Length: 260
Image 1 (cartoon, rainbow, N blue to C red):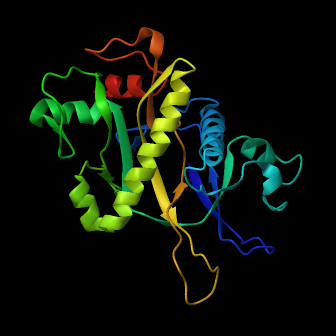
Image 2: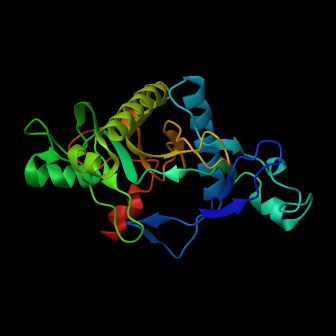
């Protein structure tokens, strides 16, 4: 994504960001040289669906303020311009937030870095799991496994206690509860459509409740960035699911496996 700061809307003075989903793809925190045509529009469409889903289920607030070029100032995407043609379908106008520096990962199945950690220690992010689990096994219940949100380099899995030291116990407990609620509702909905959401990650931020006033009060955490796209989730077709090895997928796991 390319991120730009927009001028506040004069009607509400809410600070805004423009997020543009490109066709680039990354793996292991490295951007690949070859883009995938149409990827940015697909991810934007999926995130918009899940943002609406989360709001309709009243799980938490989201950062989205607009999703079309009509929601942008005319000077940025004039009608009929190349800018408008490029931005249409791949832009999100979001409320600017202070990002809570924790990646909120929820795992319903054992794969990826969680599988590697389990093989080595029998745990994932400090959570002890039953012995004898196979790759891609469904967990007894979804688990919250936070990670650092690194400005540079790789994110690293951490324990709940380590996350509490970074952002506070009350904050991380809220993020855990929200993440698990979103995952549970989304996984149930996806499964009814024949898709397993094996795991996903969320990011949260806080806004200033009183705008530009000097004595500011932080809001409750709201969901930012993206929501359950295959860029940050593992999607498996339910009809071919077989634990004990890698799964067919609708995400970029094939790219990670190729690079490894």
